[in-house]
Amino acid sequence: MTLLDVKDLVVRYDTGDGPIHSVNGVSFTIEDGVNYALSGESASGKSTTAKAILGLLPNHAVIESGTIEFEGRDLRTMTPGERQDLLWEEIAFIPQTAIDALDPMMTVGGQIRQAVQIHRTVSEERASRRTRELFETVGLNPGRTEDYPHQFSDGMRQRVVIAMALALDPKLIIADEPTTGLDVVVQDEIIDNILQIQEETDSSLLLITHDLSVIAETCDEMSMLYGGTVMEQGRIDNLLLNPSHPYTMGLRNAYPALDVEHDGDLVSVPGEPPNLDSKPTGCVFEPRCPFATDTCSETVPDLEKLPYRNHWIACHHVEQSNRMRSEAEDSST
Ligand code: ATP
Ligand code: MG
Image 1: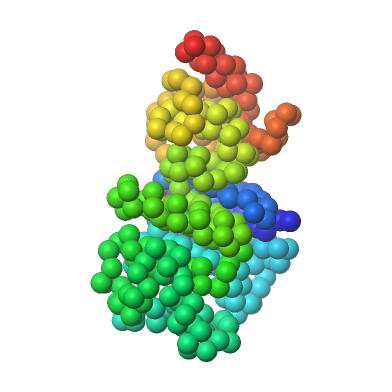
Image 2 (image 1 turned 90 degrees about the horizontal axis):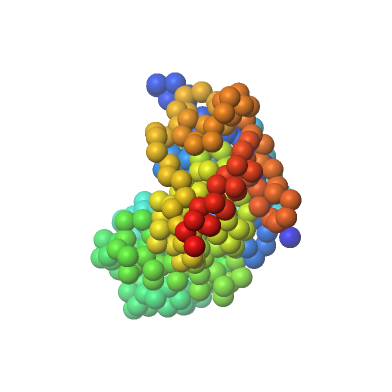
């Protein structure tokens, strides 16, 4: 069953310096039980996409078009109240910085109990028991539920936020760079923790990260974004072992520490991030692409399925990149 279906999403920010076209027609689908990754360089539109789904865009953002459906219900046409309930009960959000999600004036346990009691008719005692259980699940000392956020380290605060997100057994967990800024050992622990819980609770995961090795470890499918556009989409093994978009090929090279076999030097991605002042009139990656031709600057390539597997590419020169990849593989063996 389809859990989340995002179609042709277009989001613009109206700033004092003019519009920024941050998301330009993003589509992807998360099936029940699938762990899905959104990746891409900084400013590729990952957080904007997540915020559009969660209804957390700032006032100067405009969703120009597109649909966002959760189990067939359109999030864009829901009343704020309906959406609020759905977000707590069925979609949980783990933001990048835990401190933003916590009230400094309230004990962490108090915050979790409050969330549980607003959405479920349970006694204070039942809510407290649930809070202690959640603390244990995320590897926190259940004796510390009455401590305040500042009494915890960054990594522990992130666990508190995970516990809070799980309080109501969500169907989908959206985590935006949940480990950025934490040290590497803690990062691994948090990722293991999210995975373990998510398996236990049978929820799906939308993980936003630029870290391809984390994706290789945790996810089944992904979309690679660039300039607010999906460049490549499909199963992780296809994308990371056989990237077919020049952008992903370049990124693979930029992240050699992958948990999958590294297949030699491919192409690099020199150049500047795209200018998003105006909507792209051709392929947004064209200025940095080693294969670019006139067609690329004139026509936006459609996301098209490769004939032989669940793998979609938006590129006018898929065959050429595939040929180049085979040649690079041959020469490295
Ligand atoms: P990162 O990896 O750095 O988190 P991202 O892929 O999440 O990047 P977004 O935060 O979605 O990227 O940003 C996409 C584009 O939208 C960028 O050009 C950014 O400058 C712009 N943008 C993001 N938030 C705002 C905002 N609140 N106001 C104006 N522009 C914004
Ligand atoms: Mg972001």
